[in-house]
Structure formats: C-alpha cells, structure tokens
Image (cartoon, rainbow, N blue to C red; front, side):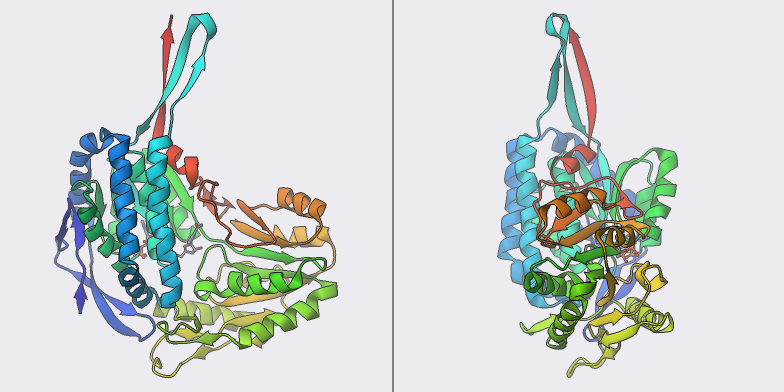
Length: 478
Ligand code: NDP
C-alpha cells in the first residue's frame, strides 16, 4: 500500500493529525493509496514555508527561474511512464491517454519558463513632462486548488505560471487523484526548486481546501472545479478581497451544420464526447445536429461508439476507462435514469459495465441519448461522464438559441463550411472558447476560461502571468 505525504518546505511530511484517507483505484474498486487528511495546521505550516521562501524566490533572476522550470519539464518527460501509470491507477483513465497528458504537463512548465523570461513591464511616455512604468510584482503566497479529471495537466497549468511570476505556492490536488502531484514534489526537489517555493497539502476540500481559501496570508486563489464549490470559494474569499480565478463547469454545445465535413465532425465528436470518459470540462455533451443530416450523423456516431472498447486502462485499445469514484459513478448512472424519466431514448450504452478482470471497477458504457427537449435537466446540468444527448435543429437562429440556453458558458464547437456563418455564430455564442471545425486544439498563449456559471477570470499566456502579479504604476516627473 502506498502512503503519500504532504510536501512542505521541500520535505515529505505526515499530516499533523496523523490521519489518512483511503484512496481507491477506480478500475478495480480497491484501496490503492493512503492520502494525508490534512487540516488547517498543515496549511499553516505550508504557508509559513512559502512565506519564508518568497523573498529569495521573488528576487531569483528570470534566467534561473527559467532553468529550474525547464528542468522540471525535462524530469516530467523522463518520468512520463511512471507519472502516467500513477495517474491511470488514481483516476481510471487509459494509460495511453495519461501519457499524452504528461506531454502537456511538461509543456506547461516549458511554456511558463519562457514566459518568466519574456514577461515585460509597460511604459507610458508623458512627452516632456515625465514617464510612467508599470512594475508587475508577484503577489506573495498564492493558493492553487485543482480537480481530479486531468490531475497533473490542470495542477501544473496553475502552479507553473504562479512560480514563473515569482510567487510561492500552497496547493491542494483533489484527494481522489493526489499521486502525480506527490511524484512532482520529488521532481521539484531534484530540479533544484528551493524548499518552500512549492508546497503540496493533500486532503479534503472542506478542510485542507477550505483552510487555503480562508488563510489571510494567501493572496489569490486559482481554482478549477465544480460551479457549486466555486461559488462557495468566492463567498469565503470575497471579504478578504482575494484575487480569484475560477475555472468551473460546462455544458458545452457541439453544433453540426448540414454543410460540415461530416466525416471529420463525427470523428472529432466521438473524442469531444467521450475522451477521458467524458470527464473533461470542455467535452461537448449537447450535440446539436441540423435536421437534414440528423439521421446520418446519429447513425455514424452510434456505429463508432459501438466499436469503442471499455475496460482495462492498461490496454492500448481501450477507449473508455473507469469513472473516477464510486459517488461519481452513481451520479452519472443517476443522470441516465433521469434521462429515461424525462422521455429520452437510449441509442447506445445507458448502463454500467463489468469488463472481464475488472468486475469490481466503476465502468459506464458510452451513452448516446435522443428525444429530449433542449431545456430539460439532462440537457441543462453538467453530467461529467460518458453521456451525450442529440438535439435536432432547423435554422442557425434556433441552434444559437438552444446553444445559449444554459447557465454555463465554457466552450463550444461549430461545424460548418460557411465562413460567414462560422464568424457570426462565434461572435454570438455565450462562451469563453469557440472552436470552428475542431475541438481541443490548444495554443497555450490564448486565454482560457468561461463566462456565466463557467467561471470568472482567464488562465493561459499573459492572462495567467497577469493574474499572478499585481501592477504597480511608477510615475517620474522630468
Ligand atoms: P470540486 O469542485 O468538487 O473540487 C475541485 C477541488 O476543490 C478539489 O481539490 C476539491 O477537493 C476542492 N474543494 C472542494 N471543496 C472545497 C472548499 N470548500 N474549499 C476549497 N477547496 C475545495 O470539483 P471536482 O474535483 O469534482 O472536478 C470536477 C469539476 O471540475 C467539474 O464541474 C468540471 O466541469 C470542473 N472542471 C472545470 C475545468 C475548467 O477549466 N473550467 C476543467 C476541469 C474540470 P476534494 O477533491 O477533496 O473535494
């Protein structure tokens, strides 16, 4: 049995209470590791270490930060298989997918290593009267709280810019998927990251996570997770005027027009619906299809899904792994029951599976539903599993109205060969991210985040560097 520890001040330490939580391997339904059940006293120790490390890290030359962050990237690359196996056992995803995600985790460090070198101050000349320049100063100690779906990918997406901007970090990965962050602690020490610059406190959201949000010395919270948790964090942080970046849920539309390249649309839709068991905030769970091609697209999607293998995460041919936890497995199955109650017709899937050798794991067949009105609960609430709903539409206006009908506004895909329509729809869609004829094509320089209940603030590129710094204007009179 693996026993994880907190990473505080460059050392691995047990939680002050000595209490541990059982963490399960979703594919087997068995306990896999013991995770520190940390509380406010562990967060305080992490904060003290971070605060002590801050003056030196803030003043570390950009070249040195660049070298250390790049070294972390190299070590993620050279430990890719170890990370991927840990992540797959923790989360349930196929190992091949976890390997792909590790490439991105390393890239997050590489990208922000370069950002540390290039992030520059602005200056504004007042002609012969004087000049202003704007210092971008690190905030101090910042909190990063990440979810279980893309564990290292999203964790590094927060901590890499926080460190590059000169902050020290107190972080908490999800208690369902702590293992890859634990390995990252080892790697940070090996890469020469000074003790205290990054601290990892494991434990439950409502104790360790809450203590990070409540800590008066932690100046900003970068959080990715559910909308309900995001609202709670906002209410706790607001009286302290903490800076907040909240990346929350989604119920993303995937709109397929009759004039689209249907082969490409269907192939990508299979991914955007079911990659990582549909447990990606960017997955398109509402598939809006123009009536002329509805039957064609539906049949192609069902055929493709019927060929997908669900089961052993270590098998290269597996497309659908296990659902992350027992409660989440029951939640997703509950939504399938709700869809039936709401009058939905299950075209494929719609049930739990017990693949050979993994009978005690939490597997759900990829599920396609049709026949539901666009405004029913199944089509409005985030399911966050391998479940999608097909909705026919006639006109562009109708597609837009349905697409914008939810409280969420994270991402959208539009499939069309009409350039005018693509631009018009992109401008009118209420979401932070629009993909035209693609999905999940990412450029780390671009702003990432949502509108409405999908969150506030943006991550990525300079947006992240701005979030993790405060601007200070200096005005010099000549
Ligand atoms: P949660 O909101 O349950 O948890 C996210 C993190 O917050 C976890 O580390 C959790 O700890 C912690 N947490 C929970 N309660 C508190 C609290 N009171 N104070 C501080 N921290 C707390 O989300 P999930 O982990 O279930 O992740 C799935 C959700 O994340 C989905 O809604 C998905 O859409 C969203 N998401 C959004 C993305 C985006 O970029 N917009 C990307 C990926 C996911 P613990 O695990 O112990 O509860």
